[in-house]
Length: 71
Image (cartoon, rainbow, N blue to C red; front, side, top):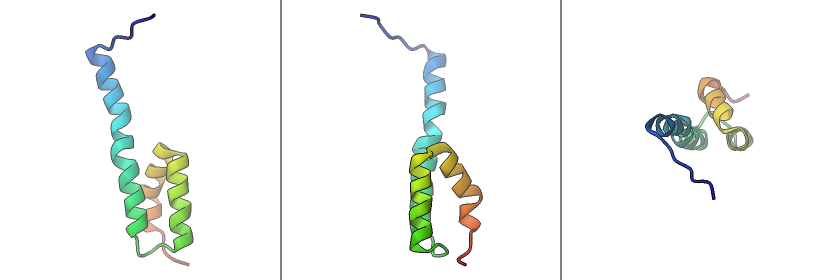
């Protein structure tokens, strides 16, 4: 069997790759649920988008979705 070893630089890269997902995705989901500006349908749409495309969905929601107003 092949042994997998991680050095310091690999561990740092993994942490920086996972940290945005661990922080941004839950924050974006919770913020969308708690938002009084969004309708139920908009909340569900944002949550689905954030779950399907975690990095992109969370960033797009935080940059654009938080400012979205009810129509």
